[in-house]
Image (cartoon, rainbow, N blue to C red; front, side):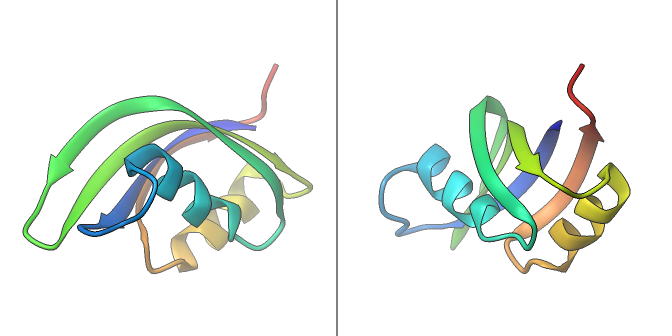
Length: 86
């Protein structure tokens, strides 16, 4: 499944923005593997940066169920797009 997800990364995150976003997305229930393919946007803030990333998920969930699980996570600001890979 592919998508675009906005992730809040704390100011002092280790490993860089992409690595931290990937780590946070990998913790979502039902995700067996995740690959962050690149940035779509970066919005710096005072204590965190919100990065919107292109992402590929390995999951057993449907797009709507995965969207629900992503929305439950504190670090996920928005799920902009989710669709099954062709």
